[in-house]
Image (cartoon, rainbow, N blue to C red; front, side, top):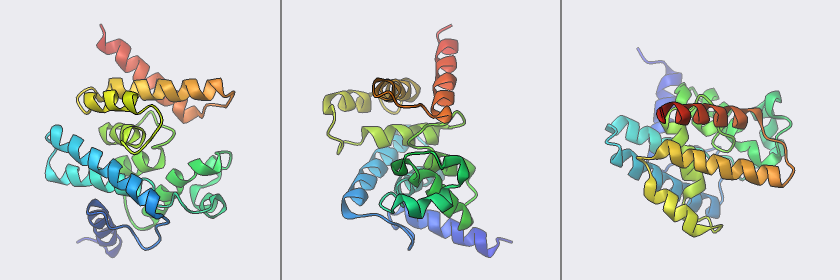
Length: 203
């Protein structure tokens, strides 16, 4: 028999798949428009990959939830994000905080929670959902920086997902290095995982 918590979490994910966010969402109008564009990309990719209806809805739910508390003040997010992420810039706390809040609601879909938590940093344990969300957040057409590059990469999705994600990750790491910023261990682990996979597939 399903528990009250599991029923609540299933309802939350079902509602999110339809673009309805939880009551505790902190999303302004511009953020919601961004989320909707990410969800549209994710849904289209799920269809192109011929995923079943359940996974298609999971992909949409992950997209709608990835920035669910993005517009909350960092000080409000830190208690939810946890001590592991205390050193993160404030604008990166929303992923871990959102995953913690979803877990508190009874959501136990670990690949989805990992995708939401680390959609900005990347993570070595990402499955295809996590990699797709990482790419969609970067590639959605509302982003104004280098739109032609983003259009080229979007055109290669979702069937060249690993190569596209590696290209995005390389660009992000290069930007951090050029700025003299530190690179989070999860980002480095994600890079190493993708690089090893790419090298293996080339042989």
